[in-house]
Amino acid sequence: MHADTEIKFRDSAAKALLDPQLRANFRRAMDGLIFKRKAQFPNPRDLEDLRDLSTAIRSRSLLNLPALLEQFETQATKNGIQVHWAETCDQANELILGILRSKGAKTLVKGKSMVSEEMHLNAFLEEHGIEALESDLGEYIIQLDGETPSHIIMPAIHKNKNQIARQFSQKIKDAKYTEDVDELTAMARKVLRQKFLDADAGLSGVNFAVAETGTLCLVENEGNGRMSTHVPPIHIAVMGLEKVVATLEDVAPLYAILTRSATGQAVSTYFNLITAPRGAGEKDGPQEMHLVILDNGRSRIYADPQLQATLRCIRCGACMNHCPVYTRVGGHAYEAVYPGPIGKILTPQTEGVGVRHDLIHGSSLCGACGEVCPVKIPIPEILVRLRREATHEDVGSQVNGKGTGRTATEDWAWRLWALANKRPALYRVITWFATRFGNALPAGAPLIKDWTRTRTKPVPARRSLSERVRAKGVPHV
Image (cartoon, rainbow, N blue to C red; front, side, top):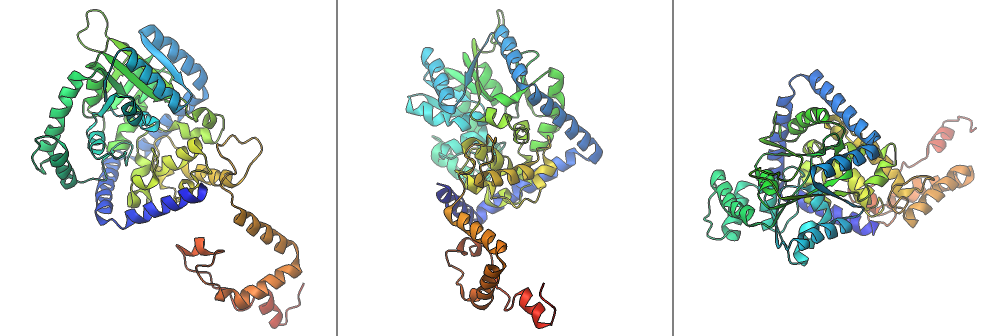
């Protein structure tokens, strides 16, 4: 399985590199996002102070995570939110299906939620006769084409307006071809507004969950999140268990650095604080609220002191925008829910480092992701750790799939290396053959083909160092 997924990633990345339109779309978008983020932080000292504060808040939240989750559940339940726990994506899907079926719901309108992508919720509900419609414009665009998000903040970033114009004219009934952005947005709005009114239930993600008050915080720019959570009679929220923070005071710095890091905005257009379903005498809001808290491997990550930093992520996407690999191959090349640097450390930990051995090696380790991360996740260091875990079975390690990335060929190669370096006579024999006949080895030979696929074949020197020293009359020690 390791070999299959590695080849698949390599092939999909190579295909992306040969697509000039895709590369142009990403280059233009990434340059714009980098510039906007930089403009929001003109003073480097202010940026570092905000990063330090945000990192401290997320680290403190994780340090007290079990207690904060219990406190949050207690407060949310008091507020009238029904809290459900799911260890796996399958359990989460079944919980949501049960809620919808108990109310006779046939249609679900969704605000943006990466956790629902992690669950593959849309496909699951469709298999059970329930329509799930994405209402975020980017998510709606890729849903029309049957695609997955290529970015966690801007899911349709791999498309330009010309491509979207053709898509809308073909996929939306009675839509005319236009490349005017406002007209394209109006087409989507016309479809979605009616869906909001007709939907039996709405679903959203959660940016922050406040233990102090039992409040769900939702950051958005389009208003679709507010429509999905307030118009339908039932609101279902889904979140990973790491999203909880202690107090409302903790939210302000995280919100400030999230919007600036994600889209270069001082504030987002909408910031929703949802604490309870509709109360007596209130004119809007859902009549019933549910929250599904998903584990899906997060508790295993939490148990490791170093890897726990992965859970600090606030899903801003800044690491992707600055990654030299992601910006050239795009999100779909990763064939994972979370692409880019954060996906390279999160996906292997949830799916297994052996199964997704390809992702942890799809990095130049340049460090750009760690330098821009608003909560200072040491992504390069974690990548190095996971590379080791993929081929070793360290005692006490809880990493999913540890040691399953090893191959028999690699094992034998290192055994031969160790044997040769322990026996001087054998080492001299091997180096003699390597210097005389190593250059005759073809680039496609099984022993070196993985290396020479992307690199020049090594050319051994015609004489070893020991031979050259002896030829000059230096005594051999």
